Image (cartoon, rainbow, N blue to C red; front, side, top):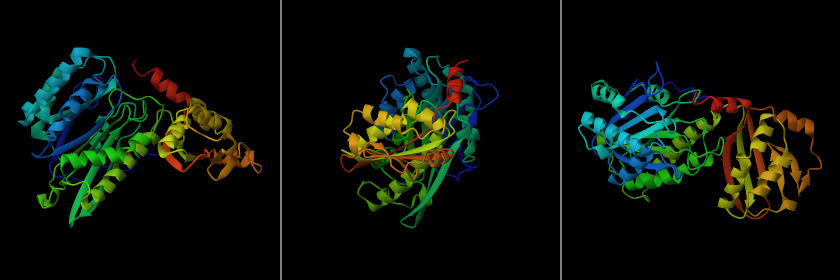
Length: 406
């Protein structure tokens, strides 16, 4: 599907990193990303709502209230989830090893893991990698960590955005991984955003929570929410040589400017995740209007986006409005059957509760051959609306996940 053509991102003042091979699962490829942040770097994060979160998610949630981050350790190949007390000890040891290397407190180190669930993670493998890594840290190239955190991804996901605030140029870099087990409340999806913006942690947290709703929480590949999904933002405050006064109020116009740029970074990364959906051949935008409320419209949109029947019909290039009607009906949200209308692209296929009078199968079939498909549904109740992004479901998705642990 459509891959990001970026090969690198600009430097972020106050951020350095290494990538390395620890042999967690993969042989012959880097599987650890270790970043160091200047003192006073603040952090914000949102995490999975799974009731079976990974040990790393628990660790980050518990330490987020400290607001300060000095380090980040990410590994691929093992999710360190459903590993009981061993998982907790692995996270604690990883944090201690990183903290000793950086000369900071363990609770100032944030951790994320992605990969197979249920297998213990040997944190001792990090000792030589992290200990020796600090002396070799650099501020580029960003393509390396983007590749390092991949699992079933087919390409690295990264993006950069610049915005001018009070005459100072602010840089926001983002990387992400994710291709399967992708659903709202994020998924087996990790994303890390780095910026030199001067901003208080509470404002950063509020902006992240706001903008994640229309990005990572508006996508789905397969309806499954992972144990490990995490989005974290690290702000060093070093923009313009730390000339910018720190933003401390969400109502500050500077917060709005930065939030808009942050939202664009999050959205871009989320779209890259959908486009790289496991086995996907179609990128699908689903717009629902006429809902009782925006929340109701979003539930209907996700019912459509998560339907295996809808997704396989799209994979088969079939404008099957019957499957869409089914998904609307099962969503459990108010809808008017006899006012329902459905369009694929600009082609109206159903209206007023039945097939559109001028529906042309040949024209619709031709549209369904496109890579990007837009599905529009009016449920005929009120003014609520929502947009959700997904992909199709193919035989390749089954193959990827059937072989994942082997």
